[in-house]
Length: 364
Image (tube, rainbow, N blue to C red; front, side, top):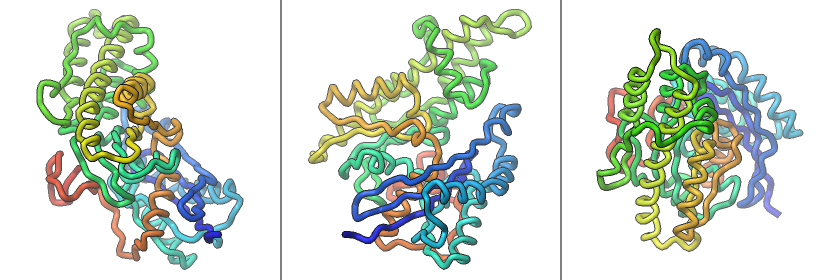
C-alpha cells in the first residue's frame, strides 16, 4: 500500500480566501476539506473587487480558513506532509497574503513548500474530480482568463488560443454593472437571461470571421453599453424586460463564440489522436448553465467525453491548489523561502504572451 500524502492548499488570488486538505494514495486523491470564505459583501458597493480591501480581508481570515480546513479533514497541522499555495497570477496583495502565510507555516512546521500557478489549479481540477487521462482539452474560462489548453501533464500545458482582451467573466461583471445588476455579475446576468429574448438585440460575435481560436469580448461589452443607452428611459432607467433581453442576448453571444472556438480547438486536439479524448471546462464562468449545455452538446457531436467540475470547484478554491501542488510534489518539485508572489504567470511559456508584457513579465 502506498503511503498516504496529505497536502494543505491555500488560495488567495482574488476575492476568495480558501484552504483545503487533499490526501493522495498513490495516483488517486481525495478531497478531505474545502473551505472558502468569500468577500462579495465587502466589494458589493464598489461594483467590483477592490484589491486593497481584498488583501486586508485575506490577511484577516486565512488563518481561520486553514484551521477550519484542518478540523474538517479530521487531521492536524503536524500530520500535513506539504503546503501548496497559489503563488500567482492574481491580485498581488492577495497572492502575497497567501504566500507569506504558507511560508510561515512551512518554516514553523518544518514542511515542504510548493508554489502553484492558479491557472494550473483550474486546468487540473477535472483530473481531481474525474481522473481524466492526459492529454485532454481544457477551456479555462474565468473572470480574468480565457484560454484553450491541451493538458499534457501536471506541469505541461499547450495553449491553442485565448482572449486578446477581456475575459468572459470580466465581460459578465461589466455587463451587470452597465445594467445595474448586483455583483458578481455572472450569476446576476444568467438569472435575468432566463426570462429574456436572446434574439431581440443583434449583438456582435467578435472574431468569428477570423481563423483560429483567439477570442475578444471587449467589443461585445461595448455593444451592450450602446444598446442600453439607446433604449434607456428618460433619466437613464431601464425596463425590467429590456434588461432581461439584453442579458439573454449577451449570454447567447458569449455562448456562441465559446462554442465555435471550442469546435475549432477540438479539431486541433483530436489531430493528436488522444487515446481517451475529453473536453473539460473549468473556471468561474464554467458555472454558467447555458455555456455548459452548449459545450456538452458540442462534445457529444464529436464523440468526446465532456467534464465540468461541480459548481463549488469551478470558482476559486484551495482544493485545486492542494491537488496541483500534490502532483508537483510527487514529481519532485519543491520551493524554498525565495518563492515570490507573481501578478502574472502564463502557463505556456513557449509562446508569446497574448495580452502583452511589461516590467513584471507576460500577462497571459
